[in-house]
Image (cartoon, rainbow, N blue to C red):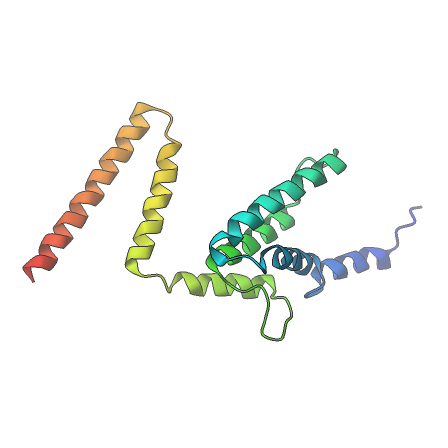
Length: 163
């Protein structure tokens, strides 16, 4: 029979779920230590690069690991999104925020963007997607979509000037 008891099994789950000191909390603390002295404009890029470097080192030390755990990847995504959005990782009392709290603040922050900011983000996304086009057909389809968008923008400007 194995030495692993039910209690040890439950203890492992409790440690992962524990607020603040659990798996998510330790990732938030790591991220906070990386970005706390950085200007917000560069914090997300530095954190992303640091995490990638740490992941590579971890994979070298653990060659049997096929992929990072899904729960880790999800947590990393939330933390990176929060840093990118300029959301503080800590509360006013100095404790680290939880996953749901960060997700909520990121979502709230998105609604504060002006239409121009949203449009700029959409154009940046479209530019990145266009870079993935591999065939002439895909590029022409993107061009057609852009022409439709341009005609909508031009019509809206003409209408606004007429008012």
